[in-house]
Every structure is written in C-alpha cells, then in structure tokens.
Image (cartoon, rainbow, N blue to C red):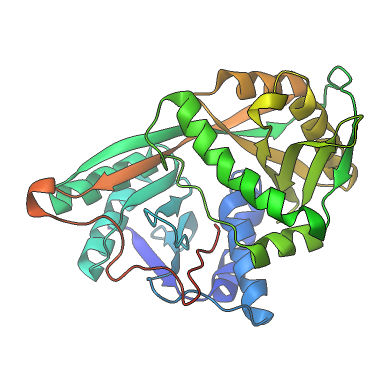
Length: 322
C-alpha cells in the first residue's frame, strides 16, 4: 500500500514538496500555481471557502522518496481532484483512502493513467461509473515561431476591462464544450468573480488584443510564475472575431514576454479542438503529457449525488479557482 501523506495547509505542503515540484515545473504547473496562490491569499487575509474538504497529498515510496502528488482545492462542480502522475497502486489507494474518509468525489482531473485508475476505483466503490469529460494535453514552448502579422496590438488589461473579462472567461468553457459537441460543464472550469479577476489584472496576468479600431477582440490570460514556469490560459476569441490571427498573435507575444522574463511557457489544449492545437504547434509548442477531466457518477438507482458531502458555494456565493 502506498504511503499517502495529506496536508490541509498549502504552506506546509509547499515546504514538503518544494524539491519535488521544482524538478519538473511544467508538468507540475497546476499544483504549484494553485498552492502558491492559496498560500499567498491566506497570508493576505483573503477569505477561503471552508464548505468542503480541501487538502494536498504527497505519495512516498518505501524509502520515503516522493513519487507523486495530488490536491483537492476546486470548490466548483463537480469538485474534482487534480492528480499529478502517480504510481498505479497509489492512484487506487488514493481512491480507497478518500472513500474511507467519507469524501464523495464528483471528478478527477490530471495525468493519465493515474487519473483514470483513481476515477474508476472511486466509481467501483460507490457503484457508479467513471466517464471522460474532456481529453486535454499539456504543451511547453520550444523555440517560438512568429505567426503572420495580425492587425492591432497586445494591451495589458486594466480595471475597466474586468466586466468584459468575466464575460469572456464564462464564455470560454461554454464555447469549447459546444464546439466539441460535449455536455455543458465538461471542462470542470473554475469560476472567476470580480475580486479574483481584479487580482489577475493587478498582477499583470491578463491581456487583450486590440484591433486597429481600438476594439478588444481577444483575451489571453496567464498564471503567476511557479518554480520558473508560467502557464497561459484561458485563450479566448469571440466567434465574430475568429479566423483573423488574433489568437496566434496574442499567444505568441505573451509567450515571448514570458520567455524574455526567464520563465518556461506552457499551456493546456482541448484535444477535441484541432484548430487550437494546430495554432499552438505552429507557434512552437510541443506536447508534454496527455491528461483528462473525468466525471465520477454515482449509481442513479441509489439516488446518489455528485460532489462532496455538504458542498455548497462559499459564504458570498463565490467559487474559488484552481
């Protein structure tokens, strides 16, 4: 049986996992950026949603070496775990440990095959079924290949852009699911509220591409650097503005700035969207690992619900991002 070490404080987790996360900052980007963000928000007195079980996990082998990590920090439906590469037995043991703890898990995101093995074992234990919502792929930028020029220029977002950014963040996952013919909310996307969007803007982590007429026609976001890697996303162009090279131009310029600042640029793609995958590969992004968003559905005959026991919105109706 794998040695599973749970943490409830992101600072404690980061201190224990520092060397491990730093070995491969691109592969570990989601866990690293989320953990650092939550640690900093707690230090700054930002209220946290305590309506669900939040934890971090390290897996250790018999010699005490870390062989994998996971976390449960998402307080948006279906309250998924995020799993970094895990040994097969550890993925199964994690599912069994959560079942023994009484945690209901509605989804598992992350690297394959551990994500699939964990979700399938959770489904078996609850008499349900595990299904793939979205196949994703993590890419890292190699050598940047400049795209063809697009009219306009990149502009960093300001406070007056927040309302449009909120609308486009919401549209991003909805449009992706619709384009792929999937049910809504397959993406397991986080919700951004005005305070969290303002923190993005204040942190210089959001840009618009502005056309020659001064209109905002595209949005590219990024996360704060973690262990020398920066993850782009979301990348969104409204339907009426697509096909004009805005996404390629914006992602290329944001990526160039990231690399110029001494960091490694990475991003996730939806494998069901060949257009975006083609764009990123043309810019010089190369695949790192395949991942998936999986749903864990309880047996409908039992009337079981999906999500953690007692899960609800936070005290102000907020859902915190990854």
